[in-house]
Length: 126
Image 1 (cartoon, helix red, strand yellow):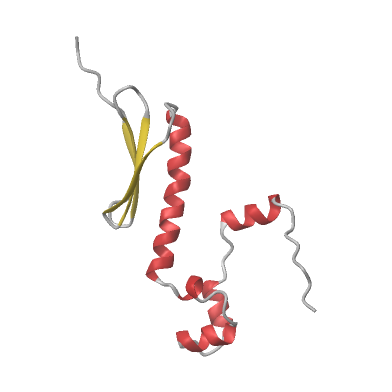
Image 2 (image 1 turned 180 degrees about the vertical axis):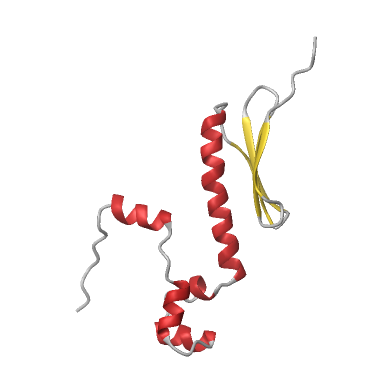
């Protein structure tokens, strides 16, 4: 009887971000995430559905790439809670227009959360 080969598929590239989904003995699917060639983690997906794994890997690759971009240039993410003037000064920007044009982008996850979740109300300060 011929030995059955196990399924695997990779997403992304090795230099930046890579997600690999693979089948283990018994048919269950596992995944590993890599950033710049370094292994971040491995996990069981807990199912055997390859189409579902394909969707998961595509979304996960976007998250890992987004994390890579934030690590490569931390100014917008690390300093986003600070006043814009302070961020511009720390980054050496001449004016706020170029800073905003370069860094203010809507990401899909935040846009989806804002549209689908109810508004978060806070207590008014006295």
